[in-house]
Amino acid sequence: MTAAGHNRCGAPRRPRLSIGALGGVEGAVVRLEGVPGAAAGAGATTGAGDKHRDRKGRDPAAEIAVRRCQLEPRAVRVAGAGGALALTSLDEGRRELIVDAMPDDLGSAGRLARVLLVLVGQRVEVDLEKPGMVRVTSTDDRESVAWVVVPDQPYVAVSDERGKVRFEDVPAGKYEVSVWHPPVGEKSAPFTARASIEVASGGGASATVSLAPARAAAPR
Image (cartoon, rainbow, N blue to C red; front, side):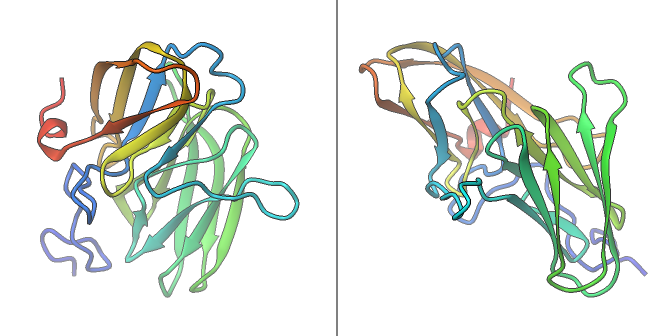
């Protein structure tokens, strides 16, 4: 039987906001909009640091794991279109994951893959060819939904455990920041917010966005 407040694997059901171990709102997708020349040369990182390419020059796959029927983390970013998403099982027994591309017009999702994991440590990679948002669903816990950002420009990142995102090589100017926190469950609404920032210094500057729990709890 499933206890109240727990899924079929005994894991506590998730709160709507994901507060990291270091006190910030983690797993939120942050986009810096209106940066000149955003299509070339710049980059975005989280406070955890950059990942390095492998020996063949490929960007490492973003990873989502299933543990106690739940997907973690809630949101990840691949390097760009053509990047890979790795799905890994940390559970014993059969786990089925569904990977859907979400259209911009909020129409029907496009099925990318149905992945069956049957062994602890089993890992399957799925190539993500187009920019946009990709939803990963666990058939064992429909409330546990993870999101993958395939960015169309470099100034897109996912907040870390401190709730921070750092954008590098930002020209001086005023920009809009949009924040999108993943919903819990397939039919829940996400948290969204917008704010304006100003970068005063010249080329090569970095801009840091910090998501405090008090602010994220009451989005506009």
